[in-house]
Image (tube, rainbow, N blue to C red):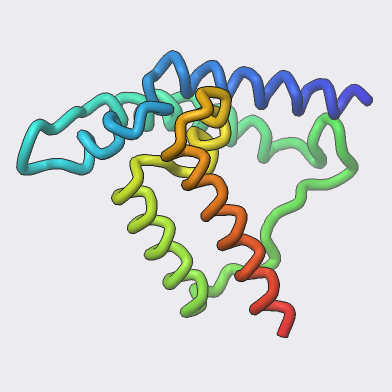
Length: 137
């Protein structure tokens, strides 16, 4: 129960951070990617702030034997770079660049009810379903 409450609090904090930083506005992301036009550096500052918080905390967390609310860390077993990983990463990047949304901000933006975000999340869910179906074969 306590771990679920912490997860919910963390998710809400993340969502509030996305809204406050303007990262739920796809125009900001597209503006960041527009390096030859009206470049918007906001995303670079948000990423820099996230890294500045994450790196010192990561060092502290890695010194622990286990997370606070679990018996062990759940780290990826695979570390090889496979073609599927490269293809998936490329598809993610293209989708992010074309729409201005990545999954976190898109889910937070669902509350707006805007058609573009509804279409994006629908396509994202369909992509997840297709990927799962193909990887089961």
